Each structure stands twice: as C-alpha cells, then as structure tokens.
Image 1: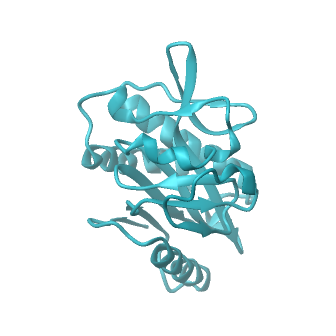
Image 2: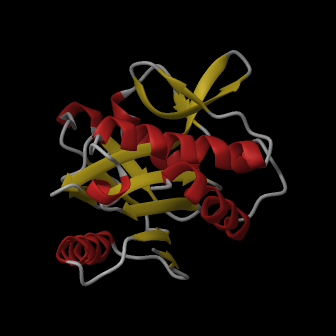
Length: 207
C-alpha cells in the first residue's frame, strides 16, 4: 500500500492516465494499491450522470470522465484523493456501496479530528456540514471500479476559491451550496489534512 502526495498540481488527463496504469498493475499483481493525494488546476469534470443543463458557464476546461456522479469542480486549495484498491482482497464479498460508505466515513473521521462535524444525507451524495440555517457540501465522492479495482475517489474543500463552483450545479444539487474547511476552522493546512487522511485510512479500509 502506497500513499503518494503530489507537490505540484496535476493535469486531469495525466492523472486519469496514471490511475488507469496503476489499476492495470494492481489487477495483474505488478503494482501496489495506492492513495494519491493531489491538487488539479481549475477544471470541471462530468460524471456518467451529468446533465448538460448543469454546466452553467464553462469558464474552465471540462472533462468527461467515467466516474459516477454529475458535474464537479477541482482546483487549487482542494485535496483530491484518488484511491486505487483491490476490493476482492479487501472485502469478503466485493461491495461498491460499502466502499462508497467507507470513503464517506474516511472524510467524516478526518473532519472530526479538527472539530468539524461532517454528515451524510439520504439522496445527496457527498459529505455535508450545517452552517446556520442551511447545509453545504464540503466533500464530493465519485468512483469508478474496473475488475473490482477502484479508482477516482473524493475531493475535500480545504481552501479553494468557492466562486469557481458557480460555473456548474455541483453534483446536480441546486438547493444547497458548497463550503470549505477554512471557513470552519482557521488552524488548517493541506499538510495537516494529508497527515490525518493517512492516519485514519487503515481503520476505515482495513482488510
């Protein structure tokens, strides 16, 4: 199992190519499972359920992707975690729903470590936090599985420019907004988030 932290932003197409290479290697036994922590330059991605009407203003490059979900934004200040695991080895009976629950739990435990209460909501993908009289999304989840090897993963809004989300309807949900960790906790850095993510991983995804 490898944890890889990328020090500089990675182009989306490069990231997908590297994930696909790793997935193939995991499947044929030549590469280890991995969690790849990175940032992207500003861009939008469209999942397999994306609706054209939810692309409001393509102010950044738009990429079609094979992950589940709808439109999402990636950019500086957001920690993306691409998770490449062999579910056949990690689960007695491979279960994608269980895996998505584990990704969400990973985020919830990471947020809790710094005093932020992240929550699931039925019918709304991702992790949410209550702010005043409303709820805002702080993390998005979108996965793909090939031969029971996972890739893509999740993104956590640490300190991105939230105005960049205005070009899309994030995950197709109009009724609620997005937020970031630095609006809820002043003492936070990307390095601290990476450290917590790594420390919480084993307890959630243990074989």
